[in-house]
Image (cartoon, rainbow, N blue to C red; front, side, top):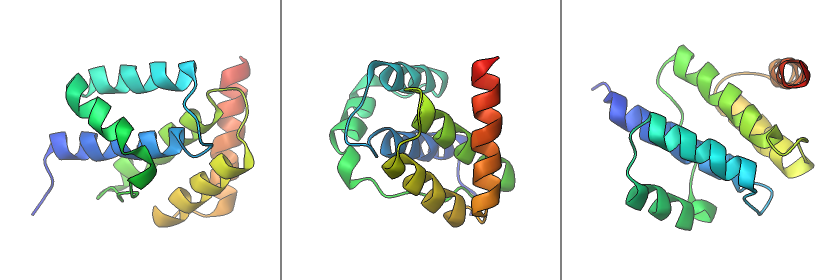
Amino acid sequence: MEKSKITIKLEHFQNLVAVAYADGRLDIKEAEFLAQKAEEYNIKKELVDKIIDNAERLEFIVPANNIEKMNQLTDSVYMAMIDGEVDDREYDLCLIIAKKLDFDKNYLDEIIKLTKKLWNS
């Protein structure tokens, strides 16, 4: 049975929260990005708060299709570097995510390089 668009968006959001908390903190830019995604996905504040309150217990959910997989990895990299740098714990989590999505380290490094290039332009 195929997942609903609502379920896919909720899982995507939960994965982003997990990445945001990978370095043990949530900075203002990460919070703003999560708020934008929650609004874009029409996730109610109460549910957002519940997800964030349980961030350390979230488990990564693998998207069902390739477009969602690429979107998930791209957003995860963006979330990891939103504070300007991808620290070691964030990189390790992005690498775990990439592998779970059937992408290799080289692909992740290319996504990071491209994101940095776009970020600086």
